[in-house]
Structures are given as structure tokens and as C-alpha cells.
Length: 192
Image (tube, rainbow, N blue to C red; front, side, top):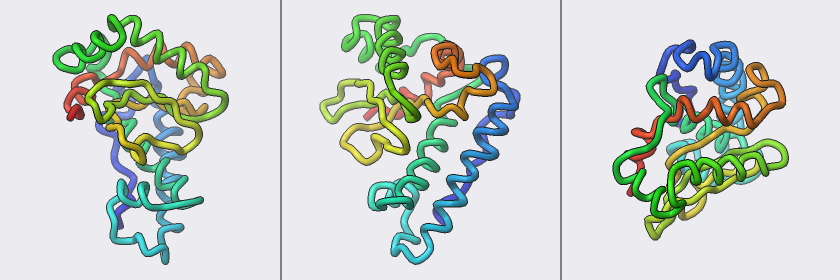
């Protein structure tokens, strides 16, 4: 079956105090699992059963798309976080962000502004456009840049289940915590 719940790439307590084990238990163990289970049920008889999850997301429509995209978005999101994360990106990614945004604090401010501007649930992404430049994309619901021309480099989950236990309705405080666990090395390796 092409849709599986991946293990977290770190222990459930590894992101504390920024993201608690209780939040990861709910976010990964309940919500992500529910998306995977629903996508697997909807996949039966769709004609897409033999495809990889990324290809299912690119070709599916309706409820199957929503559930498969959420399964993919979440699996990607876990790889964007690390207990050794935080700081500023270096190397080529750092250079690209400095060239596009002026400096890292300005990039962070623009990312936060876009994320806080989303009404409702969704995702904030750092993507690499086909011309090689970085960009910030905010998607609503299950939408994902995986279905577009850009390459996803980094994802920040903006659904309440990502932060409610730790931060209640304070999405801004969640974003501050997010920067402490961002895996810039992983994001840099995704550059084309």
C-alpha cells in the first residue's frame, strides 16, 4: 500500500519544550493517522492504488485528494523539524534567502506575516520556484505546492491541532516556537 503512517524521525519528546510530546501524540498519532487511514479507504477502487503517495496527490480529486494531500503534507512536515534545528540557514539556501529577502530576519517576518494572515487552517511553505528563486506560499486546507511547479523546501502546519495543546489560539507564539526546531539542513538538501 503506497500510503503509510511514517514513524516520527525523532523521539516524541525530542522537540520539547518548543513542541510537546502531547502535541506530537495528538498531531502525529491521531490526526496524521486519521488522514492516512481515510486516504487508504478512499484509494480502494480509484485506479490509483499502485501509485506512490506523491503521484496520488497529483492525480486525485475530491476527498481522496484532501486525505492523501494531508497525509503527504504531514509526512513532509515531520522531516522539516529537528531537535537540533533552529538558527539560520547557511550555504546555498541562506544565500538564496538573503538575495530574495535582504536578510534572514526579513524572510522570517514575511513568512510569519503570510502564516498569520491565513484565515482558518492550512500550511505555510518555503518553496523553490522553477527559476530557482525561493518563495513563500500559503495554502488553505489540504492544498499543497506539490501539485504546482515549485519544489517544497519547508512546511509549517497551521492547523490548530499542530499547536492548540501547547499554545491555545496563539498562532504567533507557535510560529516563534517553530523557528527553534526548523531543520534548515533538510530544507537545503531539497534545493534543485
